[in-house]
Length: 198
Image (cartoon, helix red, strand yellow):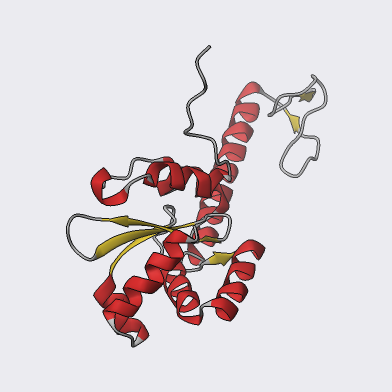
C-alpha cells in the first residue's frame, strides 16, 4: 500500500509536521486522525505541566528595578516608611497589587505606636508611593502599590489588578482616589481633567 503525506497542522500540502517538526507518513485517514488526537493530547499535557510549574512559584513577590530604587530611597529618607512598604509588598494579594490591613496590625508588626503608623502611611500616600483607601469609619485601609514596582503574581495577570477594577470605598473618605490610582498605573497626570469646551 502506498503511503501518502498529510499534515497534522496547518501548512502547505505534502509538507507535514509531526511532533518535533519531523515529517510524518500516514497510511490512512484514520492514522492521520489518530496522530492529530495524539498531538492534541501532547499539547494539553504540556500546558498542564506549565501550569503546575507556574503554581510552584505562587508565594513569590516580584520587585522590579523601579521597586528596588523606591526601597533604597525610602531607606535613606524615611526608614519606617521603607519597612511599611516592604511589609505591604510582602502581603499584597496576588493579582490585585493591594492589601487591606489595620493600622493596629501594622503598628504591632513593626513595633511602633499606632500614631507613628498613621504619620508614616499618610506620608507614603501624600508622596504617591502607595494609594491608601480608607474602608469605612475604622482605621482599616486598603493599600495599593504600583504594579511597575512590586507584583505578586505572574506578569500576564497585571491587566486584572485592583487598579483596573472598581474599588468600593466612600468618596468622602478618599477624595480623588480614582484619579490617583490611574496616575500610579499609567503615569499620566491629566487623565481626569476635562477638555475645554469650544
